[in-house]
Length: 156
Image (cartoon, rainbow, N blue to C red; front, side, top):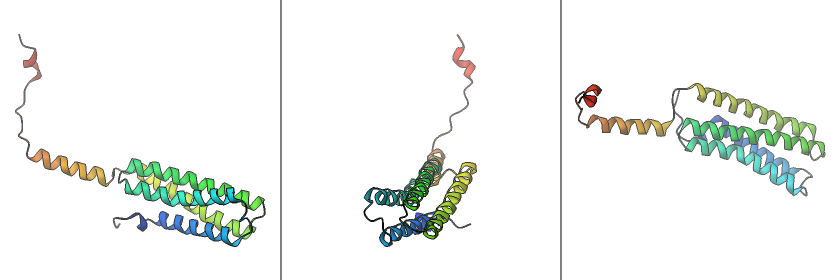
């Protein structure tokens, strides 16, 4: 398995980017240009998915990455809810809804699977690997103290 060095290499980020692009196309090509609130919410939630994936990856620690992946997953659910609102208001067709809904649902499954994998992984992230390497290098040069019995401390 190849090491991923940039968030742009993550399949989930690429899918999130495609979804955000598709949401923008939907907005531009349909008749809800005057519902500025829904448009803004859909742009923000679709952008938030890819942005949180990127931010979590760049923090280089599994716990933080998992945290941001769960935020991205929440934004993904928010977008699906907004798609329903647009469909119910007849801003776009059932077919357009189904295409975006399916993409969002697929992305949600992949986000969940990655979180599950990271939660079960012993690898903690790049920043912890660098910290461990630094500590290892420092400890190589520390003099070893001879063993001192704790009982000597309590002798009269």
